[in-house]
Length: 360
Image 1 (cartoon, rainbow, N blue to C red):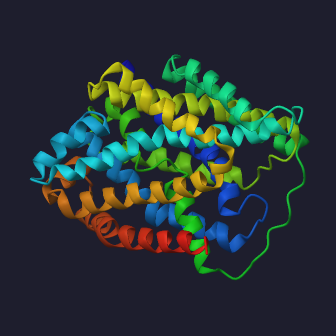
Image 2 (image 1 turned 60 degrees about the vertical axis):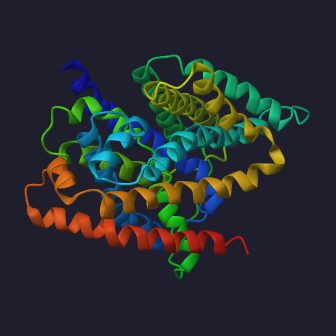
């Protein structure tokens, strides 16, 4: 009962914190750090409904079906679906992506710190120090890490509104195709979806809850609130940026801890459990490669969501996920299935084209 109650508040709070700090990490990459284009933000909120919500249901449905974390669960899920073991690759893509994303967050934090310290302190040195702190913090309990991250996020939000720079006025502009890619990235990748994080943090709750909506809706609302909160946040001033750095480091520690937990449950050698996160984080120390890694984050995250959508929509047996979600109305399940089978794959493919198109 205690684990169930804990996961009820832990998952939504984690969803808000992770979404906010990942948005802060990816916002400069997608070009929305400064401009406040009302049409783009409305598009972003729309993708949160038509794309992020179905993926959130997908994760929790698979969690209810498997009752274990993603990498471990995919062995059972593929057997249940009489599917090729190759589909298990998506779990490995996700579990390596998690510490790689943590490295991206630490890279963003290092760039903020670089504005506070003497110029002779190299970016790679700052990242190495922050990464060492994050790995040390990853031994702290998950509840404390989430609370520390939440404190950092809330402090950054409050300080940004009290001491931060003034934000530009909202304005309407003409939507461009590239903005669909950015909105999809922010709705899916920046929400931490497809990585099994909410799957992992909600297992205790879904074991006892018959209806997936009770777990999904609080998580999705928390993600949505993170989007709204970011609309009123500016990290240009030093004090709010420093608070954001704290939340980026503790959030990275949380991701590292969750990735290692999945690797432990897969019963890999201890050396491998550490090697994967360490390499995935410390590759970001190569400053010259940061722009390439940033684009890799966007594309890699979208591809994970695409594979999961195809697996859940076309490979899994209909009866399995219908029973896992236990919708009160059959129409809701049919809408979700259409979203996962058709809307999500097409939207993600278009987003991939849009993101790649911005490179040329």
